[in-house]
Length: 116
Length: 112
Image (cartoon, rainbow over all chains, first blue to last red; front, side):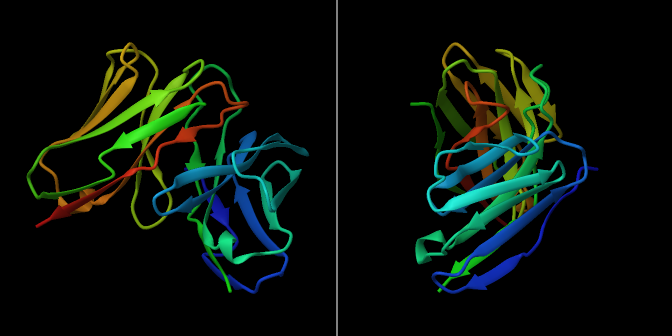
């Protein structure tokens, strides 16, 4: 079974702190994704990566950065946390094939971040 | 702008009822539509549809895609309390890599 793990289930940080959210997958997937999920807004893509050291902005990248130094690990960084970044953060991974069989994304359990 | 719209946003039914969840989309270069179920934590994959008229079925859940009319439905028959969840529809289109566009989800509550 594919396993996607996230470093914390719950996190409380103060405004202005630098926050690191870690995601690790064990299926040798090329693609990894970071989403945030808010009530009434659904899942919104922050960043994704299709290879080591490669990254692409999603729909809402402002205030976030990412790092992918190893294939299995994708980190989301909040440079200076703000209260409007309080949210559920979900990591996902998928194969990088283009044959239409690989769009399925496997999700981690999520990190509920509260910024006070 | 690409978009995925789900309806209704929320639904309350009694055990044993049949429900139909809707997902319409406007996406450049449509490639695939996926359904996920999300309970307390991570979304879990239900179905992926890539061809028109193909019905995917798993137990009491089934889904069909209409590429001409640009929508999909997810049917759940004989609902149970364990079906209570958020159901997410996502579409793969022209986005780089295998990125998906998600709808806002339908929250289904099944009462006993």
